[in-house]
Length: 189
Image (cartoon, rainbow, N blue to C red; front, side):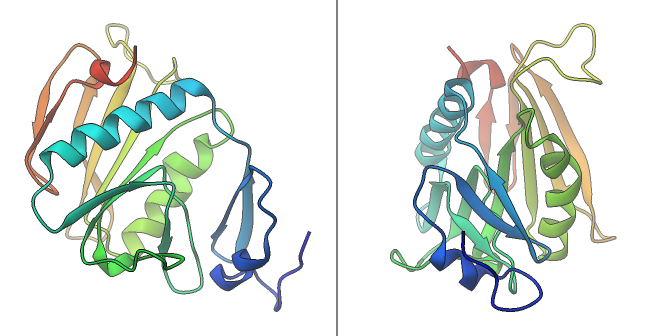
């Protein structure tokens, strides 16, 4: 495995990582490596990409598995919504263009998706952060069916504020980054 060129990892170091099916990202100068996701996770993302792409306004792109360029860091959310135009052959999307980042929580990414990445994305002033819980989870309410969507908007204090908690079987219309109605249950077979 390559070593960083300085005391910490940077997005530029990712250019030298092997193409071995693992996901490499840089968060706060640390290299984060995750295994390939399970089918449930990927199915939810694919369905969400299609739904958002169908609802997006002109000039907006919806992409999965693309890095967000935040200084020397490059976190890779499961999905992003960004204002175009974008560099189709660039390594990632500059954070200034990103309007929404989405993470689907898995056992190996729980801490990052719920605690670390929201701080990183908020500091980069990305207006919207959503995460989905596709499996039973600690803190799940008794009457909630998965998946559960947690939709956040960037507040005045520079941190995300929960605007919606929506369980499968319930539809909600979100207004940011654009108007979009979803029942999280529609994202899984």
